[in-house]
Length: 111
Length: 116
Image 1 (cartoon, rainbow over the protein chains, first blue to last red):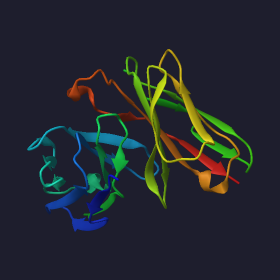
Image 2: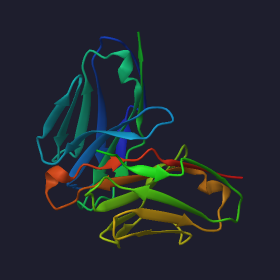
Image 3: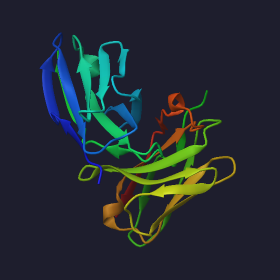
Image 4: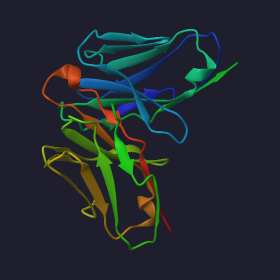
């Protein structure tokens, strides 16, 4: 059974700091997704990572994938308050759009 | 271009009733997936449809069902509602034409179902 674990589950940090969210998964998988969710809102797609060594960056967020270690990271650089949200990773093992989700990381960035 | 549209946005139902939720995917997208989000269980996969065929189903009881129409719009139905069915139901659409770069899944705003 495919399991996806995120850590930390909660992160409070100051603006301007850097931090990393980790996403481990238990079996070989084809695709890894990162999403953002604001309170009471839907899921906003951030990144789709498709191959070992894939790295994608958008603004202050950068995601990477190591399929051999079954690990993806979401790195936040010089955090700003607007990045406060819950971040989810999800894995699609067989490329069949059946996403298995991590529990989410609630990120609070204090001014 | 219009995003994924889910209707209704909010719904209150009584135990034992049934409910139908609707999802209109992004134009041209062929795959529609449904997810349930609750504080206790997080996000869980319900089912996925492609070209009117259910390709995958999650670990939910038979009370949860769905279908997809020829225009790719999808509906999910929950019969004999239970209090535990209260959740945010999200649908996602994907282009899904076999090219990995089209694997991105876009979510609708969700339908918040409350069972009383």
